[in-house]
Image (cartoon, rainbow, N blue to C red; front, side):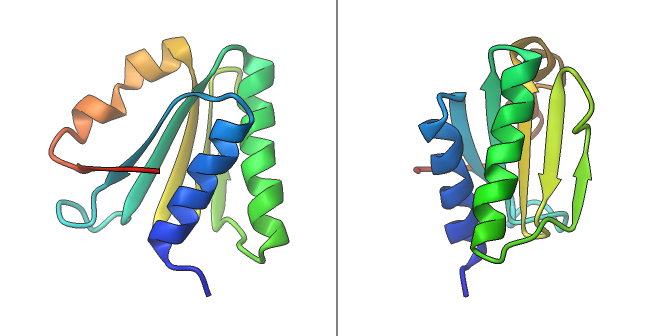
Length: 113
């Protein structure tokens, strides 16, 4: 069974392998009860944002890791895959600047992939 950090790193590596921009893992378990890790990445277009989210969902599903919830999948600017202890956020570059999760969670621990 994979730990939450293993899932976060796997998701980040999937995103990186598909040419996502600026992939980050934020460790928030010490400052939030919401989740343990956020994986944040950007795509260059709405098509790439959807393709990145689809690829993470597909690859993790092959490992029997199923999201508890998916949001924004039909959006043109973001997608969220909630795996409980890991939340994967894929944004367009504009939406990422707008939501600015790295600033919102600036007290988090940045995790190396």
